[in-house]
Amino acid sequence: MLKRLLELPKAHSCFLFGPRQVGKTTLVESVLLPASCRTYDLLRTDEYMRLVSHPSLLREEVLHRPSPVKDIFIDEIQRIPALLDEVQVVMESKRPPRFILSGSSARKLKRAQANLLGGRAWTLQLHPLTHMEIGEGFDLHKALEVGTLPRIYLEESREAANQYLKSYVETYLREEIEAEALVRSSGTFLRFLFLAGQESGRLLNYSSIARDTGTTNTTVKEYFKILEDTLIGRFLLPFHKSPRQRLSQHPKFYLFDTGVERALTRKLSLQLEPWTREYGEAFEHWVINETARLGGYLGKDFELSYLRTERGAEVDLVIELPRGGIIGVEIKSTKDPRPADYEPGFAALAAIVKPRKRLCVCLAPHPRKAGATEILPWREYFRLLASL
Image (cartoon, helix red, strand yellow):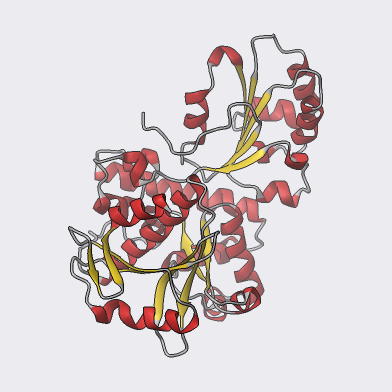
């Protein structure tokens, strides 16, 4: 079993959020002892029906649990938000257990104005596998083609991995998120999902997407917010010294997994060929997601954005450090990036703020320095981030 970078608190209750199949249940079960843990699986129909009709049963059962039971694991807590009121009552009792409350979405909890326990439980997020968790055997090409959801990445058969991805998109994204969103038109939402995959990593043009889906800008923005709230993707805002200016400009949106993006855009049957535009986009997509994942796991508090000037100069990723300082990152899927690949963007960034580092992340076998820019193999880049 792979060791995950995320560690559950040993003596504190927590929410554990993450998309389906990132390994939340596996992680919890790997650290909780069966003899000292009681599990409530709300995906089980019988358990769900029992508790949705009488949420107080949870409180009554937990308060009268045997002494050896120290932990309570509630899986898919967002299915019955009312249980959180009962959890709080138990937390305020004389011998409260540790609660692990997992779910694939905080959206339903927020929408139902659920009791989020007022800081009594930490909020953690689990992602697909990172290269650090997989270790030296990590296969970058495989990660770009099928993503790193544990069951899919670890599947030896490419055909089986593709089938799992298709099923993930069809049964989860198309049904569960559709139900979660309470969308009026399923056809519109399905067309939106396809376009969201196509637009992943690009500047969002809400008007264009609204026109292609036959809906409004407001609806398209709500759909993207649904994907963000259900942890299926993240916005990358444009860099600007003024936070207000960042919000007023076009963001980018990155789906949480490259395999899911390829499944949504129906490209799983196509080989991802190195040195092509598609490969470069997948590599950029993966590096940005991996930066966000590792930054969160390692407690770095990075603020991530991108830069694009009116004249078209770009920096793929701008990392703002919590103690001050800016790192500009250009991402190139080549072994030998040229100054023309990265200097215009870095010059544009330097005209706004002097970056602490200029990094070009690529497939080079060894690191080198080219003027003020460090050319870094992707593994070296992530080692550098971990050391900051």
